[in-house]
Image (spheres, one colour):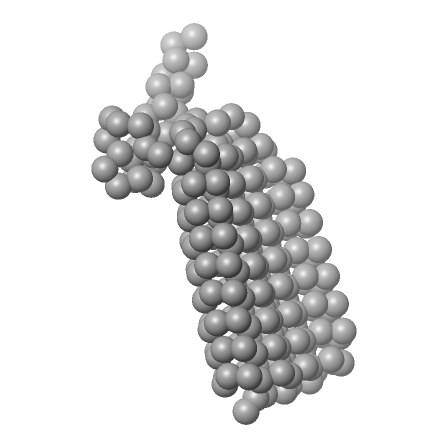
Amino acid sequence: MMGDLKRLALLSAVAAGIGAWLIPGATGSDPQDACIAAGGSIRYQSGTAACEATGAGSSAIARGAGSVARAYGGDRNMAVAIGIGANASAFWGNGNKATVRGDYSTASAGFTDGNTATVTGDHSTAGAGFGSANVAVSNGDYDIATAWYGNHNTATVSGEDSRSFAFNGDWNTAEIDGNHSVAQAGNGNNDTASATADYCNITAFGSGLTTTCP
């Protein structure tokens, strides 16, 4: 009994500490729009933020009006949604990680194991899954990065209003450093499409192909 009480006290202290860290100035007062979940229960919730976390070692943290973080359907999944209307989901597998830092952006990682989706920016999307060890990263506003339907695919965007897709195979890479660009790599293995300028539109479909722009 005493052991259970000690564990409960420790979890409560950790949740309070995380809540204070998430919300500047949240020391004893009720922070607005924040949620923390771990181990199948919600440890802290305030305002319009929502969260859930199921499975061993899974956690979810949401901060911001209307933000949602969900980690479920496996173990060691982690979802973090920071921003107004931010949405992060890590699901149906193990060791998936979805992170959003921006307003009205979405990150999803799931359907098998070890996938990572990360967004830093507003109105952007990152999706990684339908395989293992896929990585999708969006750094900018109004971007889309997806890495799925295979293993070890990587899609990255650094810019504004750009689209990066790595799919249908293994070890494909689509990368953009520019604005209003599109890069696609897939329908085979070990393809690379790399755009390092604005208004590029390139594809690498096959196996072992590399295309660049400019």
